[in-house]
Image (cartoon, rainbow, N blue to C red; front, side, top):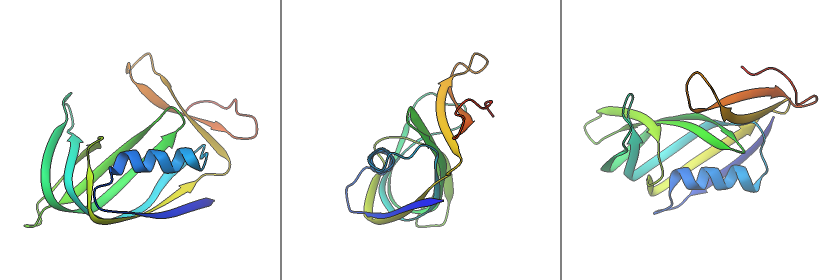
Length: 139
């Protein structure tokens, strides 16, 4: 597994920085291995909602998980506020770093991720292929 590690600084957009890192390293099947830090502003799309909710911090990252393909990402973020209350959802653009966020991303050497329109869901969904043949079945 190839890994990249980096630190984000105050004011950086978390989702945009993650996308830029995977793009600049040409990662074909990337996953978040770990992320820790604090956020001043969080933009999430909650389950079953179509609109983005924006809340102002401070927040600590409790969990950040997801996958990256050349066509896009699917990332979920959980955060805790100063009282310890936790909320989470689909990470959206506009989530801003407060002081720092430390990130490690891994690339799965034997796979290629793509996002393709799924007829059942109507969304761009993750398709997983074997890297050597690049013609494996979706999962």
